[in-house]
Image (cartoon, rainbow, N blue to C red; front, side, top):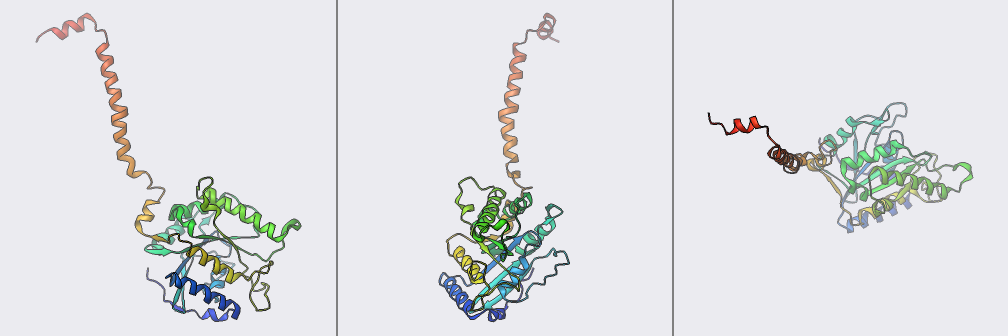
Length: 310
């Protein structure tokens, strides 16, 4: 599909001056690393706040949100430019439907939208106020991993929305956040089939987000979390740290998609398997049968008939 038109990042001007200053510093740091374009892929289950997070990052209502309608199947890319820097944010539909992976949505994301594009950052979005981690979480992580490879988690952040909450049972806020982050990180570890002790999963940062218009603000007018953190510059800083960490961006070409398709895995080994079966299974059986026949004691009439000339 054709790329969307890159527009001037007018939403940048809606941020408080303190936030603008911090963001410009971070964009400058990226440009020092020869990064003048960033593509962010936003994925997760339905209803976790993906689109709202995209709008908060852009600073404008770039993605239409209707809480009373199901999410559309097609991804949406929002492209903005500021200070000779281009920011692309890709909002995707939830890939779980009726307790199963929505393969139609996933195929649209991969083949019709991301093919021949580069993913610089994955924002894996879920809600902070969801107290359980279940098999659905692992299914989403597994689908992402099967689509883009384990290396995508080198470029990932876990984003927890609805962060302006009062923890249950009187738990301290930071303790509740830590427990929720650890539980989701464990689901990522299991869903992505990362080996025990693999530093990849343990190094994925967790970032808190509050998209509500009722989010508290500091004296500078910045949206802040209950712990006082201005979350928009904090999110962009975490993104910057991942980008400059040295890990490679993910280029989504046909080879990547075909090579990671679970239905295609192993097909290239079929001829080798047949060859091994022929030489190490069928041939030894044939030789064994031949030896048994040779050792078999034949009746006298069979010996007589074998020696008779016709």
